[in-house]
Image (cartoon, rainbow, N blue to C red; front, top):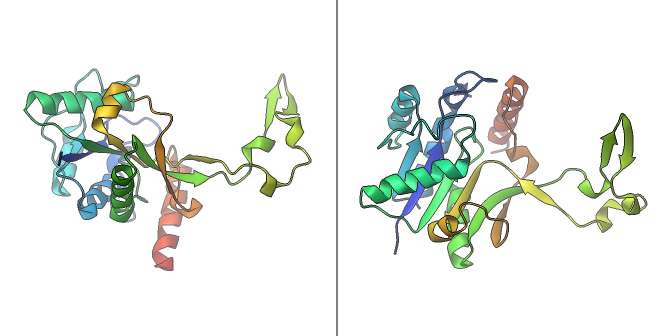
Length: 231
């Protein structure tokens, strides 16, 4: 059986929320949630953080992740993609004589990730022999009944859906922006561009929150506390 790696991508620079990846979230640095979820999942042989920041690296190690090498300058700027970062990590491990059959990319600002979700995603990926697994959430409003604005005027994008009942429209989902699990061989073959053969891990809307600004951050904390209360 090939080995499995969890890669947590945590660049140092953050303009909208200073030190976003290590900012305190409900009592501990937000990156700690991703690390602890990976550790508790029990499915990874290696859990590492890819970062260009010594401060992030020190906190990552404190919570149990490895930082065997620092991210290059090339993959630390505003134009580097997640795929660029993952490819660099895999290549660096390859130089060190280590390869992996499966990998997870976990974002550092994903406090709703749990060990159970990661374990399920990895298990489903393997059992279904898929290329990728990822958590998704249903759109709260049918996108088929959306509007577009052009020159200050709003028009319905798909007028044929105007009279259709919501329950008659196909249910659609979007990426929850938390983590992805891949077959490494297939990921490399496709250069990270995967649009099909994806196993969905459907999650509740309460467990999903983009964190791009301070308001998002506060909403995420409210949701996180609500989940704790429900438990």
